[in-house]
Length: 271
Picture 1 (cartoon, one colour):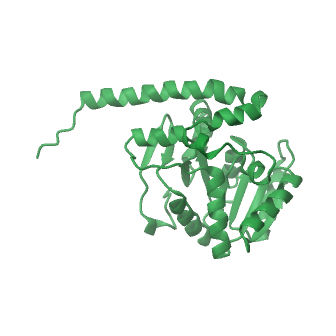
Picture 2: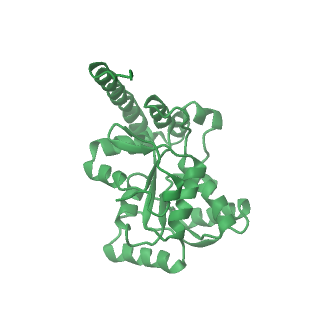
Picture 3: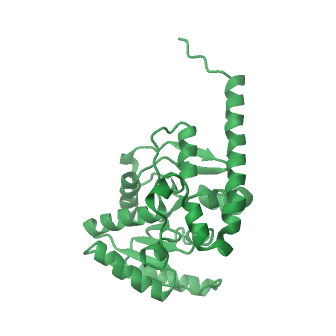
């Protein structure tokens, strides 16, 4: 599959593997340019904002890893992945954080008139979110919203949801179902929805005002997890206290393996 179909003029992106997951070197502007090109050509595709939780989930779940491999774009959502890309040769890589990508695209959508749809959360969350986004981005075309029940949907229920999104005229759908549920949902709609689906995790809760975000200085230092863990320790303890140390260990092994490989097969730079 050509990941840049419909946006060839933007040029190729550097790509690296962090553990088993492909992560694209991109920026907010580049990501929005690609989303705009895909939305205008009605390409059915999805965007994953990858953090340590996403990478570690994929490491142990081959089916989920295949879902990530089929994404049109995988952004470095977490600072550990940003640092990983830099260590792997993408020196100027910066963070492309899912919630901030959502805001960047809403600004672009307000300028271009490309309609969006909000899928996930609760009805109360969505009502607050719509007010917040339209206040921040006057003229933002929100084609519709839907809060699915917190249970597995039947095939018919899911088909009804997708039909509702399709009929709304939206070309970009923000999906706030959490990892791995939102990526699994987007993958199932590949080819069913003529537009771009973007998984944004907790962004709906952040921008509705229901959950506070970590201070920016903590985000920049890669300490956001401490803030979030302090807010929801029962739900997040496994994600942060088990996944994070294991990620550091496994990525360290990956880097060591690359050093050994380079020493065994040195590049001859002489003419």
